[in-house]
Image (cartoon, rainbow, N blue to C red):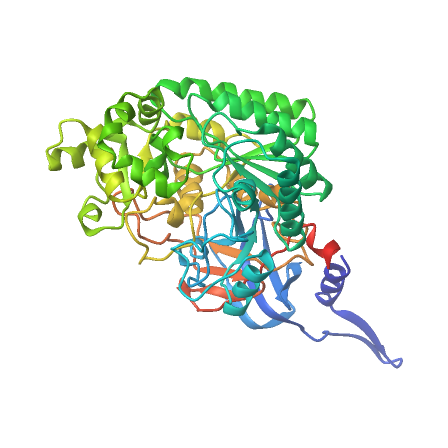
Length: 552
């Protein structure tokens, strides 16, 4: 407020009396800033109507907003015709910035903060092998070590990481699905506390179908998370026949652990289940009206993406990925797999053989099918039954094939998007045009797609509401205090986009294409995208969770 008042005063000429001769007006000295964005339509992120204003930045912070005619800066941007908004916050990602510091696919559509750590988090890793996708030469066990590597390397965007309940359990119990002993539960709590104190933001859970095998253990970890004044993120793994059980568990966590619950990618998959989604939306609304702090996010597409392994029954997977690959190659189990009710139901949920596409494989023989639907692959191979195709290919790849699944309705996407408690998230990663395979287009276009398709073309959201869902709403969900709004004193994460041209430029068939219509992106006061070109700057920061400062 002091800065705003000071700026207002400096924009007015001051009367000065020179002796008794005359009353004259002398201008004050121009206010100096690092960056000055002039003439833009400012959308503040709170949902307020846009206004014409200038935005000034100094020392990585927003210094002033208003008609700053009497101001100068080392760099000025004429934002005529552009919208100026807070940088976008993606609450659900699989970003890995080690070895990929520029974060091209996200930063080019205005995302300045990615929140990672959904199914497995980067720590704790006590006793676990490093993921094969991690760049060679990197090794760590704790969040402290991992965050240190990011800061040493430098990153173009800000990063937040949750800690995965499944990751903690794996460190303590491996792939044992049974109940933890009191000593094992105590170790899990210790690892959770350590992770939060090292800067992890909140606790995230991911269940295969129907909720956790040991719900009371998760409740205990959620209660501990509440003691650290942070958030519980719930990945609804079923999204189909078992979704009600998982939703009920999310409500139980909110009630018994007394903490905010955020549901990742709210949707329903499988055409036979589409009509059930309005009921889940109503359940969340009723829970909120009853006093539960429950929110959700979504990605703006009718297809999802994850491993083909999700088609297969749990008894094949519960012993870990290595054993899963062995069992897929066991011909004596093939008919049992094909006739298993879970295999049939989950294949149906995922879109059957016409809806299931291959995104990424590893061996040259199988990579030849990337981008194709299972029905097409079976026909090319001469397989009579596509169920045999998926089992054979998964066995050849040790169970490690990722896919895109066309199994949702556009009507439901729009229904979820209209809910005021739903933010926009990608469930994708910050990648570049050299990303392997045929990835889901959401990594390159989620935010731009909302602004282009759902705001400008379809009118599902107003411009101000769309920006709120990508800025202040996710900041509010996280409890992030100095980002998500254009307010003097807040961190200068800012995006400038053209409301008439901003759009995603890719497709499911050709996903590797950056968004268009976002000429400028500022991260912590520094231009990372300048006239549509990545500057190579790495001003991003690790944003440490609520428990971090108290632990230092």
